[in-house]
Amino acid sequence: QVQLVESGGGLVQAGGSLRLSCAASVRTFSRYTVAWFRQAPGKEREFVAAIRSNRATYYGHSVEGRFTISRDNAKNTVYLQMKSLEPDNTAVYFCAADAVVILSSISGHPNYDYWGQGTQVTVTS
Image (cartoon, rainbow, N blue to C red; front, side, top):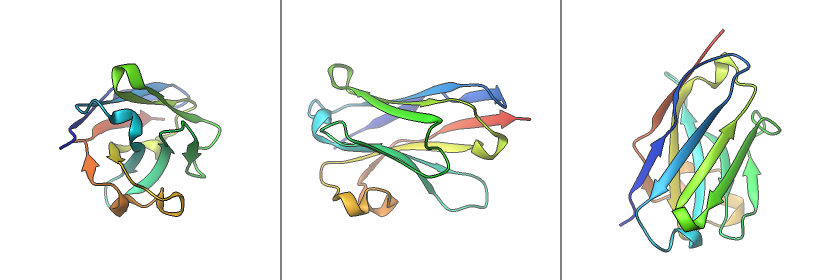
């Protein structure tokens, strides 16, 4: 069983930055594909970014160039650095992980077995 704990959310003004963290309980976390999704009220869960065990990264169109996903395997932690935040980025951000995610399914939330509880990000105008 993999437990994921997100942190780093908060309130920020438009144009500001935040860094989210996703800490995992499993020692083999480096072998997992880890993704960030977000969900705003009344909207579907949206893919934000993912990083594979080989450190290859993938981004949703709306965040490409502004968000960066990275991992520190020694700390069993994945980060999401968010810059130039916009009010539309307001959502609960979830970390998800799975040991087996094929590339064509990397942006699909049903393909991840393990989820954190989420962290709220609020961007004010």
